[in-house]
Image (tube, rainbow, N blue to C red; front, side, top):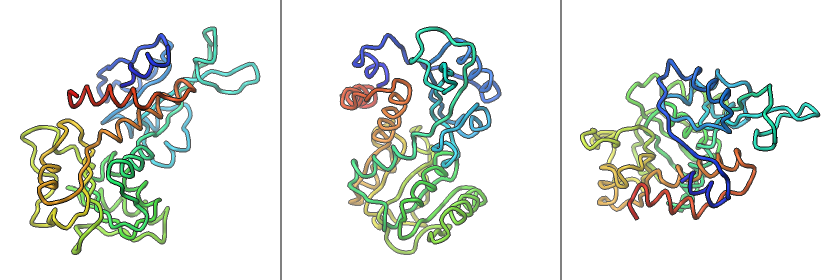
Length: 276
């Protein structure tokens, strides 16, 4: 996706994947900075620890409490921090700035892929880890009618609920499964990535037939066991491909300062994930 976007923009850059152990994350960020990288994407389990490792944080990272995109910057002659591509020569002083492009990407995916407007909706979020927390905080800011939080460790869900109540005192946040029907069930757990994964919840607690739509952040396989069951139950369904696309589009724009070629990136992503 990113390399297709870079090629379309005519940039002689490459987007590469590197594995970094949690204990080595800070060293990896410093190494990328020292080697003149333009920026980084971070995925689990690095998004939360990276908050404390950035030299500066964009409002998006501060607001949603996680970093998934890093941009390396240098000072211009007036002392203003700007992205590295704006400088023709190597700069001595470089800083890392952390961004979060996940939250807005999720909202765009829900609207585009499911035709769902979070405002006034009744929503169940499964998972209160990094992805679940960001999703719940962002959804709460959209003023849903009710927001239900479920997590394997209840204390984590309670912590997220407290955050939401502090930020949005008028929000209607409940721990546990809803007793009535809902507009959206969102799976923000990693369950479904592997074929032998158990379902993200037990249907004795909630029947999929009572959900108007189901969104699974898992995008590989293209149809998780959860989405397969939801489709059979008559729900509108979507996987995490749209969210992955739009968070990547925003990251590319942050690095390049240019409008990303969305359709070209979408086609590359669909070919990679779906083989189409």
